[in-house]
Image (cartoon, rainbow, N blue to C red):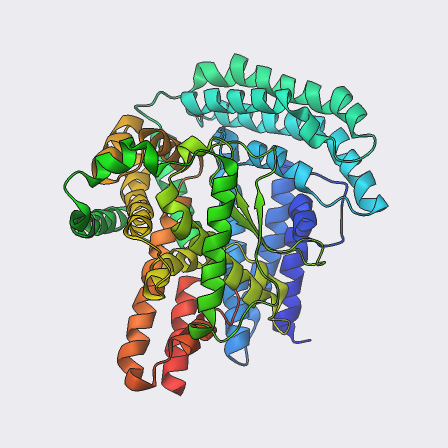
Length: 529
């Protein structure tokens, strides 16, 4: 094994050791007993290990393109992991967003693999360790509050409501023998204690909806620039991102115009655009995925070995969480799965079914993850690196690619594609508006009401998502624009020799990449052709 690959494996082992729950979810047979230690002491130990890896990476001399990519991914991961520690967002972030610490832990614990006696025993130890997890979270929140890093009041209220939902549905955690006792003796009291802390200490200190963004916190502007780098892989100016979003929104308005003057009102207010039951939602997902699978060979050279499974989201997943993809586990115990959230179907637009399936499943996340799984000759960190701009950028690119592939079955479904496109373009405007320009929550809501056809409930949920995880929403459009830019560059350079199947093979053939590395890979490929 080369020194480059050995260091990459060392980094990935360090990450798995730091995040044992993620390791279990991914299907690695490692520590099945521990929860993540979010203490400052654990952060310090992790930062020291990351610093050592960075120093080692900077001394390496990569011998070829693959090694240059690997070193680039190592340095990116070290940087983003370090920024997460230094940004200290864990101290002020209290929300119902499943991508944040407490909601994510509660949502994913019942989804851990428990298919062996060792994993079953480990699951019980994790349940019995949940009181320590919450005690550490309370300690971190108190430290942040003392330093002026306070939460957003209405997000705290939503977090309390989320905890209430879990307390009413603790049976979702009863997945192995003996879990009921751990739930009653440890999990319930721990959740109730954290809930009381939110009400008694966090809520009174909460910022109002006039001051919800990072820019209102000490050092918030710098923390937001860290978040932009983490999620887009580039040091982008919030003002430029904001202006890009406005431009894209104006372009989309011209596309919407072909569907009539009051298309926004029709989408928002006509019940015919919304689902009525879970079976209808699942059937729509299966139909869209099957259609995409049939057309894919004309657009891709590599087909996944396994089809994308389609299932209802588990009971522990709250109703506000959108449909989402879960990649196959490393040990083969779980296939790549598109989870359709069938709770509250009346709040889901039918016209978005196809675009969502092409984004989350085929050819979006399922093709990307399946292709990465075949890359056995590259370090695991390149297959598993959580680079949002690449993964979400690819999936958003696939929503428009599906239009080229002729997959949208009606004008209404294509209108759904535009609706989702407008939401993502609006994210550039609103995320930067909230966290860099000091917008109020209502300003963000008003902008999306005026410039997208999303319903008010969905808009409010979206805005709160951006507040709960600054910068992540930027990844979609920033990544998509890079894929489109590089495709146009390849088409112009190669002319009649350009084959879309080859382009897709190249962009998916190296694992997850930063946008700079993606540019380098495609530019190198063009030059070689």
